[in-house]
Image (tube, rainbow, N blue to C red; front, side, top):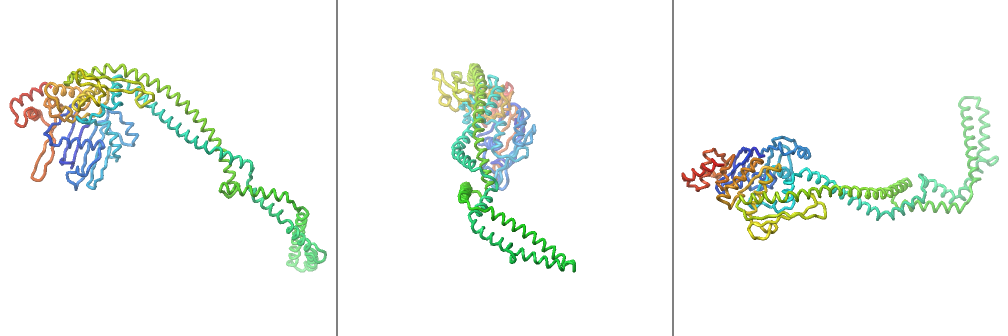
Length: 552
């Protein structure tokens, strides 16, 4: 319930502070006094978009703040979900800045307008004569039956399972799309995989192949040069090794004359040993060299194959080709895994649908049982509201597909006059009749659901006399279960109030402002008397007002 409302610099409201009580709160005032402005302030708290023109003083910001007792609305988890501090008395604030910007806060934490609106739906339900579209909504009509059938827990369980089912179907769709895409690519990827597997690539292979190819391709030049080098090293008398051996002999003659000469001889010996080893290795290599055109051709084909694969896959090394081969193998495995997942998920969906079907059938059966009770209560209420010739009927039909509210389609048929054919509600009822029907519905639901604060904006327009009194009685009855705020011009309704505010204009030399006054008992009598007789209050009107309040 709303406990406090503060409005600063909004339209023709300068500074307003109201405290609200439980039960039935009545707001009265002359047409144009500012009652709609008060509603406008409430709507801003509920997330409605703002207009800079709504500022009273365009140089100052507008602040609207409402305190709500949310302790009985089970919103703790909702606050946690949106990372907001929970307080039993939560403060909702809206600020309109002169720049045109708008800010919203819940318990001093900034929130978006959509977030504010989401919370607002739990807090205040505003209805006017021309704002009764809920009645035409099939889901709302089903909710009426569900409230009577005492199966809100079953509905929540069904909806939880329905959400799981929806997620499963969404996941299945995603997997199928992924599988279809992979399947389209599978043939080509399989070809690439087989091609790479057939190539039997080895890390570092290309360098070895190119080295071997270069040797075979230039074998004649290699043989010629090796042969000449060996000859230069090992030729008798003039060969390098012969001359080196002679030089070593000369050094041996002087090595005993000093350490330096001994070192010369040792180093020369080392060179001789190294040259001998080198000559022997080159001789061995020369002996093993053999022209092999067939082998050369094989090497050329292998090298070309590897280069073609590198070009094809746009990489530079065999290691990268090997990685691609492994990835292609994993892709093939993924395709099989996807297929298994799809099959498994299909089975899960089938099981979920079986459970949903059980819930849906049970819910539907309870709804059918509640229909006669709902119809009777609504007709009883409508009769008291002056619509005693009304007839109505709820018809349930099975749906093929699951919906958030089960597998029922509902049609609300109505007739306001005796002998008239029942028609869909939208075609069969006027605005005033729809308001009274909505009042009857809200009255029926008030004791069965945790409803938010209900604000009725002149919903009783067009009624008078006995019906007006019954409207007041109905509002009074409803206010035992919910906080009800009603804007009215009917003295019969105003007399039922637990709390009564008057909205009026106050004019000074330079501007007009709206003020809201909580009326005392004496002031209430005069206000209701004015509703009865107009601005010229008579003693009879005052007596009638006292009697109305006394009999509330």
